[in-house]
Image (cartoon, rainbow, N blue to C red; front, top):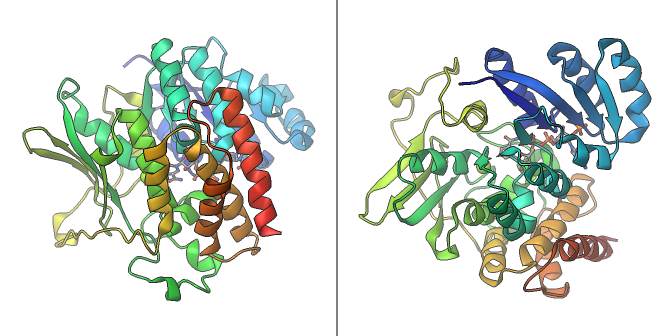
Amino acid sequence: MEKKRVAILGSTGSIGTQALDVIDEHHDKFEVEVLTSNNNADLLIQQALKFHPNSVVITNETHYKKVEEALWEEDIKVYAGQDALAQIVEMDSIDIVLTALVGYSGLKPTIHAINAKKTIALANKETLVVAGELITKLARENNVHIYPVDSEHSAIFQCLAGEFQNKIEKIYLTASGGPFRGKKKEDLLNITKEQALKHPNWDMGAKITIDSATLMNKGLEVIEAKWLFNLKPEQIDVIVHPQSIIHSLVQFEDGSMKAQMGLPDMKHPIQYALSFPYRLPSKSPRFNFLDYPNLTFEQPDKETFKNLALAYQSLEKGGNLACILNAANEVAVEAFLNDKIKFLDIAEINQKCMESIPFIQHPTYEDYVRTNDETRVFAESLIQ
Ligand code: NDP
Ligand code: MG
């Protein structure tokens, strides 16, 4: 494999730091060109001193001086602000952009990266949820590959290697069920954020951890899968698999199923997205069958965890509905993390926004931006 030059957007987050661990383990295969963070100036500086990128971006401009002063002697360029984040991905020397930002903030830089014909390793699923049609069209026009980092989609992608000409009958996305699997609405009335932030199998950023507890994450992943693999909603099924060993499955026309499995460890899909089509060695612990004598499966409870049902509705109707759902959910999750609303209010706010914000069947980029802004204002008004 030729050495690849990588830009990591959101390098200080859960995915970003694990990506740097992968690169550290394979420094003969990867070079870090760009690192970015939003607020975490200290970690960004530490990472830059270790990996010596060409440039770093700190989006919160109030930290610019601190980062600049720490790095000016190192010949590392320092930029600040959201516009710099969108522009930095166009740098000639970048081969692959890992989008590990959280939420809607990933959309604009991803569009810039695709227009600059950079390969995308996509962790930021919200980008495909908000504007999947536009992103996949842009990628096709620019002949750009989008490799999934999300573990379920990486699993599907790995199952499809060597099968790209064969028709997919169906895919099954596995779900751990989150910390409240088996609970009913009455059990969830007084859930605290501390309880919701305790995921049984994965250690992730706060937003996706809450999304996992409400099953919104699986809903976002259903939408992500539609766009990545060009599927109809009825071809995407969700099955709860609490052990998180089978990362997802593909069923082909002949009824044969392929699954990808292993211990839950995000470094695996991150590395695969960065090294594709090659596999690189890894020191992570190996699966032992006798530690898992039972792999179990259950139907997801779409009534208690309404967000999953809302995601399917948004796929059926298309247009800007998933963009509305995403924006509402971002506001609601933040409000829940700030103790302003209760756990079950998240799905209620999402549903009210989907019912109230004007529907647009064929949105342009500007329509997505407006929909996102309008939904946020409306969702905030439901919280106050
Ligand atoms: P984190 O919250 O841990 O990290 C987010 C990163 O993005 C940080 O570097 C953060 O900077 C930066 N960031 C946050 N908001 C902004 C903004 N408005 N503008 C610019 N930069 C910003 O998130 P995760 O790593 O958990 O998740 C990243 C993405 O990957 C999400 O879309 C998530 O759904 C997806 N994903 C994550 C998985 C995981 O295991 N964590 C698994 C599968 C998908 P700072 O540190 O300064 O705040
Ligand atoms: Mg996932």
